[in-house]
Image 1 (tube, rainbow, N blue to C red):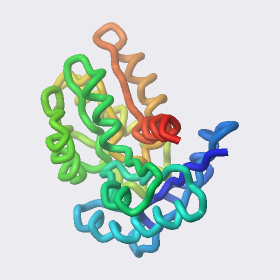
Image 2: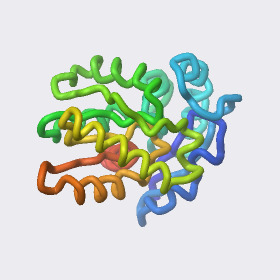
Image 3: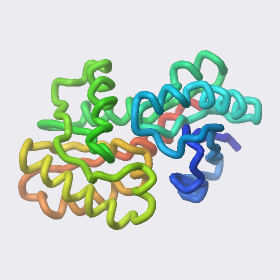
Image 4: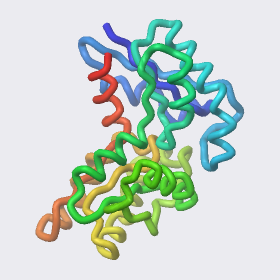
Length: 223
């Protein structure tokens, strides 16, 4: 049985839970969730991200000592991924970069990242630029206006707000491919895609990517 450690780089047992990952377990692999030692309950700025780098590294090291075969740092901003990789021998993955790469590769006209809040564009735009994938990228002008901790309180409302946001991006800029910009939107990509495809099936093919699921698939290839 292979173990993939899922490191949540905040100290908030409600924002993402072990139960969220249990449905992704397989006969030969499992996901074990842990949280870092910090006072922060969600990440909303570069300062927040910088503040959790060291405790995230520490938790990855602990995960390896406990027998993890790989670690996923469950934050779209890929917090502490490079730093952690230098400290352990197991693969350490983020979620954001992989999702952006897939979106850029499969999109037809344009792709964007759906942030929980527009203020999160402050780290999304530099990430895309650093990857050299700006050719078909359009920065989102709209958002569901939800902080990470609010998303899980009412998933149905979050999906509705994501839908309204995506419709605006499609109709104003012709976006055809989306990736969720917050890992707390986990599990919402599929229902969002269905709603969008039903509305725009005669206009264009819409794709919605779940960053977590992309990271899971890559981790399984590496272990």
